[in-house]
Image (cartoon, rainbow, N blue to C red; front, side, top):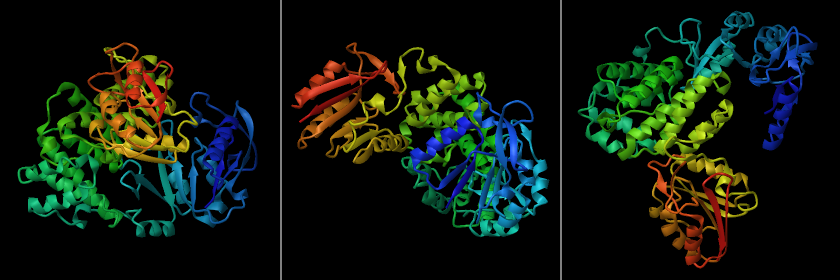
Length: 554
């Protein structure tokens, strides 16, 4: 397919061209013009602080060329995305023939810095379009202003009947919702064993639940019936082989049941599950409110929550399903999941965050890092927020020094030292491993193998010429266990990234290892490498960090 992009701002267009070139997106054509209701010239105002709010202006700004959709010579246009910061009406006016000819699905911005452009629904209706809303569950539902939560509503979709029929047949649109949704779906088995078996079939594929299923199954007869049935309905709501309307009905029933259970007894798992389901249903205001409540619960009570190990629940965000949760530190995993979910769901982007919310998010991310979970994601977001707030103190913890990974170079993976090599990465979880696999692949690694483990001493390292250990793992187990294994392989080069400190016996917390751990001095690492009969041992520390890269050959 082909993408045609319109961008009038000189600086933004230059960045877009660079992005297209770097990624090899040769199917994208960039036209440096504004789109309006006519061909000619308009004035354009750029926002230096938040470029995403650049817009056309009657006064001020600079002159830019503009065109209208009806003037374009395009064929087979299937999708249009409109983000014109209030100029959508002009685009529709200048595109009546275009929309009549192509009938594309249209995604358009309805929220212009808090001002809702619901009047555009009538404009689309005049073009024979119906308006819909996409929900994170993965499909479109009908939309009527005032009938759904709008606090975080940013975009709507509009489509003609033929497109809607196609989307509905593919499970991407519910169609008109029946008045009694609950009457349209099957009910869960009354036998708890049968109901849990259905839940287990779905949840067993989720990494976070691997070590929890046994306990959930053991207590399935004692579990709150609403929670068991809510889990059953929620699993059904994720079944992409069924219709969108059935999925939506199951989702709404799951919300009702888990809400009942939370009212009966509030717990971390129940509120986490409810926030997840509300988020899927597009009820982001409720989701954020529940995450706030969970944050308060975690602040006030540090005791273990027995219900987490007795009844099924789900983390707040879908990507967290693929992260590992250990029963022995389940509350820490939940806290990390809740706090990072709150940071990412409580604002559209950093452009919409004031200094107070930035600082609150930084505190939350530092708490996430202290748990040792979701490290790569938390560190990446923290770097962005720290730059936005110019808060250097976000890189330090009050009682111990913290160092945040600054990119591949911090781990000693400089261009040229990884290219063409066989790399093994030891990572805490799948997300962290995937992140560093992407980074090393970009730098030209020949092959990359990820070993997921929280205990390097138990890892069997395959033959390689580069071992990359994440900071939270790169302490004595790596030196005492992995090096002898590597030394048994044929001639190779060793590239090892480790946490070190110049002071003997120093304790640091790096990327959130908790509690803080003792790390070796660079000279101690060199001595250990030398014991394995390596030669030409070199090491280099990186900036002001506690990271060093060690290189040697056999």
